Image 1 (spheres, one colour):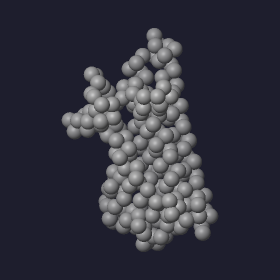
Image 2 (cartoon, rainbow, N blue to C red; image 1 turned 135 degrees about the vertical axis):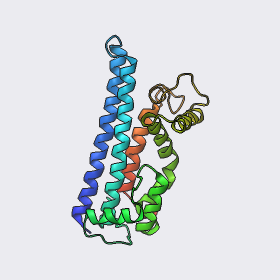
Image 3 (cartoon, rainbow, N blue to C red; image 1 turned 135 degrees about the horizontal axis):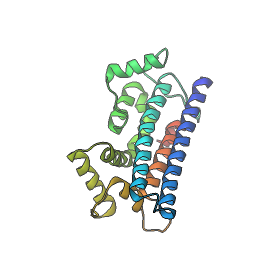
Image 4 (tube, rainbow, N blue to C red; image 1 turned 90 degrees about the vertical axis):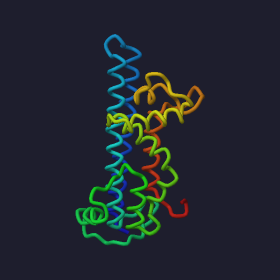
Length: 218
C-alpha cells in the first residue's frame, strides 16, 4: 500500500468537500443578503452569484474526477484500504494523463458515461468509478442545469426546461437556472432542500463514495 497516494486521495477529497461547503455558504449568504437588503442587493445580483457558484463547483467536480482517476491509475488505495486493480502502471501523473489521452484526446469528465468507459479501460470492472452508474441520473440532471447557465443554445435551453418539468411537474413562467435552484425544493416538506442545496450535497456525497470505495458495497 502506498501511503503517500492514499494521503493524496484523502487530500483531494478534503479539498473538494471544502469547495462544496464554500459554495453552499456563498449560496446561503446571497439568499440572506437578498432577504435582508433587497434595496441594495437585488434579485439579479443574487441569481448571478448562485449561478456563478454552480459553474465554479461543477468545474471543481470535473477536476476532482480527473485527479482521483489518475491517483487510482498510479496505485492509490481507497480510504477503506482497497487497491483498485488496474491494467496500466504509469510512472507519474503526466504519464498517466497521456495514457488517458491515448484513448480519448479530450477526456470529458462531465459525461458520466464517458468516465465509466474510461474506467473500464483502465481498471478491473471500472474500479471505484462503477459507483457512478448508480448516481448517473442526478449527475446528468445537474450537468443540464450547468449547461443552461454556461451555454446559450436551443439544446441547452430545451434540456433544462425538460428537466424542470420532470422535477417540478410543470414549466413555471420565466424559469431560469437560478430560480430553479433557489425557489424550488426536492420535496414538499418544509425542511426539504432546495435544488441548489441538493446538488451540492449530492456531489459531496458522491465524491466521498469514490474515495471510500469498497468492492462489496457495489
